[in-house]
Length: 79
Image (cartoon, rainbow, N blue to C red; front, side, top):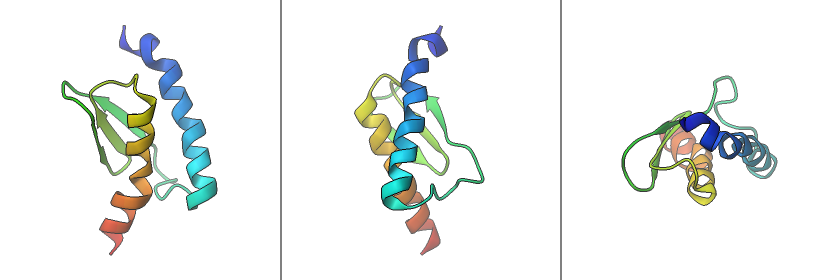
């Protein structure tokens, strides 16, 4: 039952996304969605519109990887 376990954490990412959009500008991929892929490894890795992460229960790792959507995926791919 992964979703019930992590649903509140997943839902909190919407607040973080809103906050980052206020300070950094609109989410670069706002016409698309943002999602998570839980995989059996430590830490996380952002990919455009998706984060692969070892545990959805880490607010700091989730927030860190989400921030890479602005500084990493958007800037790197654009320039």
